[in-house]
Image (cartoon, rainbow, N blue to C red; front, side, top):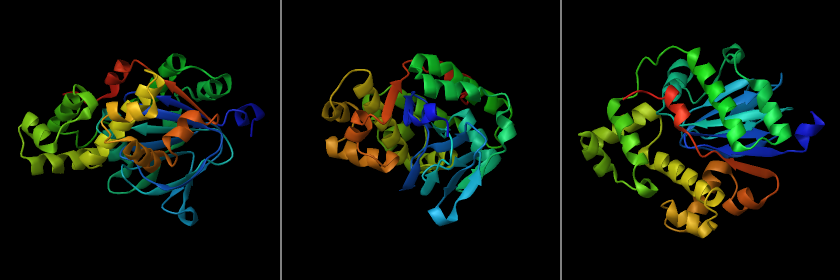
Length: 279
């Protein structure tokens, strides 16, 4: 492994629509999250995904479905791990092309032939800040989206409207009944459609969004972990701690205070609209 990469264990870029984690090495215990996980080798090494360590598949590009328990090992080289909202256009494309009803899948590496992967290694080694990293992250996503066909079953417009409505609400606070009413559906029909088209239950999706909000409150606004938890809509700091452990396998104080993690917030995210499902 490149000595320069070893010096920078993990770099995490926090965007509104997705999070990117650049790692030199990681071997994660079983966990799950309410968004898609796309892992990309930044060299010629494989990484390994599966329900348990003894049953992992090898591949240079892999995807894990929303809310799917899995383990992950990055292999001997730098890796980019994306967490992508399942309701965006790219999320729908990835699910339709590779997952369907499967929990995991290996993606052909040549689909990223036009992606700026060398820049990802440079970002890792040279410690790029969030604003410098943002264009290459969107370039990779746009490159991948451009090589995939349109989803066979586009995200239902009611789900798209509900997600956009959620973005206007403080702390993402809205009941399933209120969201269903906003898009003109019964609560049961809305919950069914949301899970069908995003791959994750509404409750898990909201937990993920609140987690991102809390991370922004700490990184951008300088809030304490307790204040960030309340501002993001968690019931208390213990709830924030529980969700962070569920999604990342570490507690918030470790993630924000441990020198192994360098978190870079990216303040603008409207560029990702280009790969979103239109209303």
